[in-house]
Length: 336
Ligand SMILES: Nc1ncnc2c1ncn2[C@@H]1O[C@H](COP(=O)(O)OP(=O)(O)OP(=O)(O)O)[C@@H](O)[C@H]1O
Image 1 (cartoon, rainbow, N blue to C red):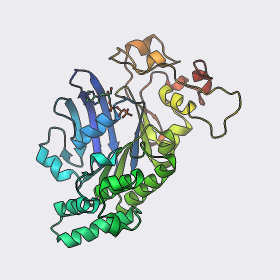
Image 2: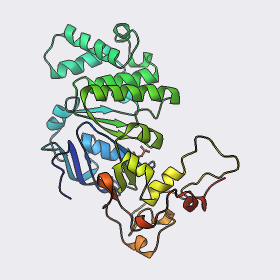
Image 3: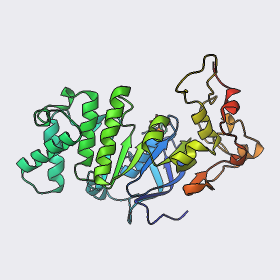
Image 4: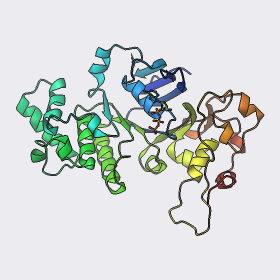
């Protein structure tokens, strides 16, 4: 598949081999368009974080990465460290799951934000500090001028995460990559942090690659979704379309196993039985868990194929046979 030259980020045939030789990401292609939110979802171990780190150029040198990752015209895979250093915080902002991985414990939050400002623009220390405080205000840190003089450990988890968003957005990058930015937070705080992220993104027009395993967040916050399974593309497309009519059995199973808003007493919750494969399989990686799998699925790996409106793609030999809702398919293996 050629690159989409109109996309902000265009990833093609990304393969990531771990030091053990295991191929953890196996030929993934996707695009992020300017200003949009693309959610990357899938079970733990699907390769979401590795994909994000490959785009960010943050994988250890012991991993082997092939394929192509283009930011606009610029090829990032194989780029020298200096190229990435010029992009981080300027064209690409990064919000990790744990803000402490980007905030140093030995400097105040304000000093760290000011240093990021000064790394890009030659403003005075005082002006950089003022911009740091303004950035903390924008992410709703109360009493920002005073809080800027505090250290990260003096912030609550939610405040630290908002400070990390402020830091990522300081220089108005075109692309933001957020890896499970709210997973470590209480549900009540998650919403605030996601609201802050959305507001910042809308104010600057940045695109967002949002990694999450929470389909509720995808439904509420993303424009398009890419469902990954065992390092591969399972399904992708506009969020509304994918939720209204999933075409990959894996996606349908994930949606079927979402707890209903109002539980029906005595009704079993569908579940996808089994666990993802630990090694390579000759056919579709989901086949051992898939209620529709047949002999072809066990021998022939499905490729992403156009499947619906809005550029939807599905990697499944039997998507046309998939009913929706698919609860009954997954109830066979359901848990009480
Ligand atoms: N540095 C590493 N060395 C060895 N194995 C790794 C490394 N990083 C990731 N892996 C393995 O690669 C696979 C994919 O990991 P990745 O973190 O991308 O998954 P994920 O989809 O982000 O999962 P999660 O939702 O749990 O974060 C997993 O099996 C993981 O154990």
